[in-house]
Image (cartoon, rainbow, N blue to C red; front, side, top):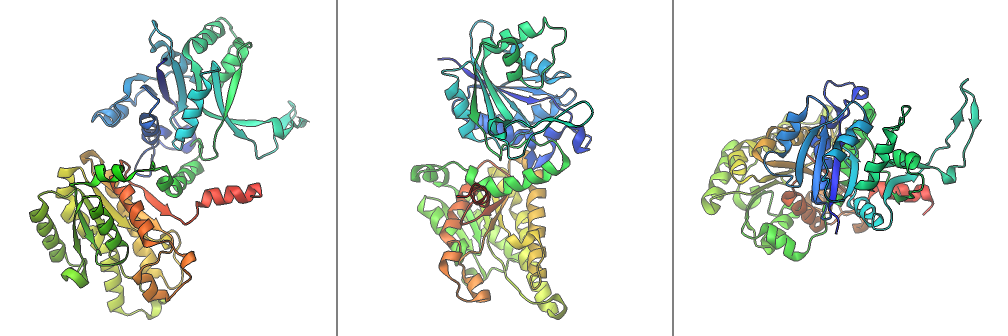
Length: 471
């Protein structure tokens, strides 16, 4: 059976995004874009080996990513060339000469690649020697004359927008480039076009891509990709069995603030059901005031004494003050700010030593109101926005120590805090607290960091796509 080799193409310099670093090194959701992409390739069960082609002068950044063994499938880190085609040729030259293999080439700046697309590419290579990935064109495409007038408008139903990965039998792509090198006018923007032109008898199969598999090219793409990570992060977690949860949590030690009721209590109960040791702290059960450093210090000392080490820390404690800022009392201002923002800061500070030793995970909770302040929520939404920035900053600060920091952003959830603020609401309009708890465990045990994970009753992107398709 042929080996499957993935080539991560990270040779671009990213001049269009207007930064002084290659666009593949821009951080989105807590880590460089290309590291997200590398993670997708490394996790895929059918990929045996990964070769990285990096922009000249920036190989040290890739070595830093891979030094601790997080991506064991990476076997070579090479310098890219000035053009895409020359970079591909360097990758092909790095492949074994004594045995053929399947080679899958993917742009480093397409970090939202799905496992399904990779699987479909390898499946197609069983029958075909060249495979492309593409999606239907939603726009009408026009072809221009030299004088900027329309020459023709092709039939949109037959047009597709090309993506990566592209996959080949390595010997086929090598042969196409050998012939191309003899053409003094050779020029191509991708590898399938090389096969199409120089090996015209070779059929190229097209695998269905996905709208989310976007390429980060323009400045606005950075923002869009960051929001897509937020919307899809939870959907990207692989499905786990009961045995998977037990393997990840049994014998681990967890601290939950706000653990006496609501989401916090559900997280604690669910974690304990999988064999985790959980210490819960709250104002009602343990008289723990998360706004007071002394109480956080006491909780850390108590949990440390009971467990010896701490793998996971969760903060669900919060208050929901409502009212126009002009009429809010000074006491409410301080209470809301201390509980909703100062508390996460104190918890992060006091538990950092434990999490650093355990290479553990810290989980905060934010609210959808953080994206846009609304009347009556000035204190709450501003504190939640600050928590998001705290999450992303700490993920960056603590990445080298192996500490993961994420935030859950649940849609309206059936909790005692919400009922107190809004009264009884139709149950079908609210997320279930237990569903949020399970998503929280998924986040705690995952390898990702710096994510703000949207939890919705319905996937908002898929809902929009279905609506556009008339479903």
